[in-house]
Each structure stands twice: as C-alpha cells, then as structure tokens.
Amino acid sequence: MKKESTYEKLVAFHGHSCPGLAMGYRMTKAALSFLGVKRAYDEELVAIVENDACGVDAVQYLSGCTFGKGNLVFKDYGKRVYTLYSRRSGRGVRVLYDSGSIPETISADWERHREWILSAPQDEILSLREVFIEEPERASVRESVRCDRCGEHVMATRTRRKDGRTLCIPCAEEETG
Amino acid sequence: MKKESTYEKLVAFHGHSCPGLAMGYRMTKAALSFLGVKRAYDEELVAIVENDACGVDAVQYLSGCTFGKGNLVFKDYGKRVYTLYSRRSGRGVRVLYDSGSIPETISADWERHREWILSAPQDEILSLREVFIEEPERASVRESVRCDRCGEHVMATRTRRKDGRTLCIPCAEEETG
Image: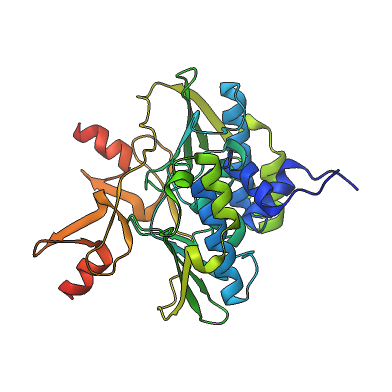
C-alpha cells in the first residue's frame, strides 16, 4: 500500500482538495520551515490567521494550532495572511499568499489552479518575513457555575445577572425576548 | 501493527489526550449517531459549538465541521453544548455534557477523569434532544481587491474607505494610530 502523503492526509481532514486548501498547505509548510519548528503538541506555537477560508484547515492540521486548543487566533481582515509564532524562540513569521503571476487560463480552472499552487516555486506565490510581536496569552480554564434558570453548567465569565439570579446567555436572551 | 483507533487519530490531530477532548469525542460520536450521519466532506453538516475548548477539535475531526470550511459556528456562551445539523435531512440535535455523577476522587485526577469519560455509560454524561433550527447560511466566496496602501489583496467586504482610497483594516488602523 502506498504511504499517504501529508497533503492527502490533510485533504482527508478537510474533506476535499481545493485551491484554498492548497494555498494554506504551501503557506503553513513555508512558515514552519522558516521558523525551523514542527507541529505543536500543546500551545508552543500560535497561529494568527487573517481569514477563515479553507486554507485555515491546513494551518490547523499541519501546525497543530487548532481552534480547540486556543492557539489559533482569528482576525477578520479578509487577507491571505498567516502569522506563525513560536513561544520557545520568541520568533514570528508573516506569510502572504499572492498569486500575481498565475495565468488566467489556469486560475479559471479549479483543478489546474490547485495543481499549479501545489507545484509553483515558493517565491512566485509566497512572501515571508520575520515579525516581532508580543507573545499571545495562553488559553485558560475558567470556573463553571450552574444557570439558575436551565440548571446547565456555564463558564462563570459568560453569565448575566438578572433579578438576583445568575443566568447563561441563551436563558438571559430568552427572558428578554 | 495495531490499527490506530479513531480516538488515537483524534489525539494525534489535537496534539494530546485530555478530559476536554474525551468529552468532545463522546459528544460528537453521540450526535452523529443520533442523526444517523457520517463525517461531512463538504458543508452537508453544520456544527454550532457553545465553547471554544479542547472538545471542539473532536467536532472538527469527527464530524468534518471545520473552521476552514465555514460549517463550524462558534457561539461564545461558555456552555458544554454542541448542536449538529444535517442539511440533507433538516434535522438537528443538541448535545449537553454534564458529569454530575462523577466521583470527586476521579475528577481531580486528569488521567482517570479522561478514562472515566471515555467509558461512562452515555446517559450518565450526555443529554441529547432533537432541535428545530433554521438552516445556517453556506460559506460564500467574496471578491478580492488590492489595498491602496500596502498593495496586498483583501476581501472587498473587509475594506475601509479613507480619503478616496480603499484600505485593508490593518493599514486603516495604522494610519489612525
């Protein structure tokens, strides 16, 4: 049996192969290599992503900066930019994808576009530069309380006070109507 | 070579095994089974998660509702609740995790807690009920323009106008100071 490539495994995670995923694959691989780091087991890497498109699944899968671990920070700027930061070295890298050089006959064809991105020379599609940023905060665990209306657990920092009761947001909003 | 279990593959994606991941694993498996559906290749499933803790990586990995595909909706309620919705059937299920029955000697021990969650009878830790929700919007692709200051591409819907120029948010904020 042929060993699955990293890209094939990534496609299995994302669900399908597309130009956006291919972009994210090239960007994340380049950023990891620039910093000389491997996938994060815990929070040793942080990714700041400036869009929420397909490519972010490549960030999650390849760098280990995932939504659930709290080391994936989303800035809703609509830009093809990721910044990867290593807590160990304190170094950060900003990666920009720009396919300025792509022929239109290719960009109009989904499959050819994807293959082009996967095989293009790095300096034709990516700009990388070292950046100096403040270390992002680590994810923290918060105390949990029970909502006085539905009785379900809720993070204490996400409650609302109403008539002397502590409510979760959905209950508070339902009462307000 | 022993075949890797689904939980072991999930741990490899998340980076480590912890009680939060085990909760997410049980919740997502139960929700998929309730709806009688498999992992989403594209956007045929949508997950609405009411927290951003470790367990959400189980949602992403097991249900295919990922941050990058746009079918993972985050509501910052701080509750141990996921809602999974199938576009095909129009059915939704709400899953609540509540470990009311866990002995304190176990919950205080990270590893024992995790193993307890993985093996507890479903009705001791989860409440599932069918819910009727409006179909969430699908992810869409937006037009891209160039920022008049940095020259980088940016989604047209994420630009700011300033002195007759079209700027990306970071440039607009830098100029404002």
